[in-house]
Image 1 (cartoon, rainbow, N blue to C red):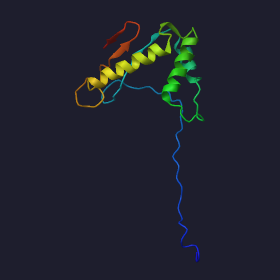
Image 2: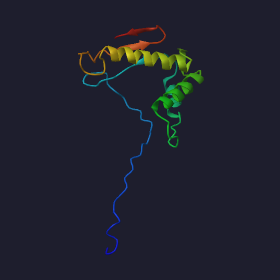
Image 3: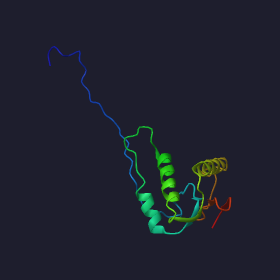
Length: 136
């Protein structure tokens, strides 16, 4: 437009994150790469456990909210309903610290960077009830 040559025209683009709960079956067979697996308890009622996970809220409007917050909320959901699990870990801080330590050990062993060969058909599990890694 004449007289408006000094005004730049453009478009603003915004990327938004959208969280949603997804429940899918996964394979532990190659080539899938399961990163970590943690056993926190023995399931008493699988349907009830699934219901607890499904009802765990997702905080779309909380800017700093992330998947760790959801895992913490889900942990409280499943451990507060005594019909879900038999023997289990009941303290979030213990679970969180154990998981972070286990992941750090896996990083040091090059589990995630692809520089070492691993048999992905035998995914190790950190069993918090035994306090040890178990491999099928």
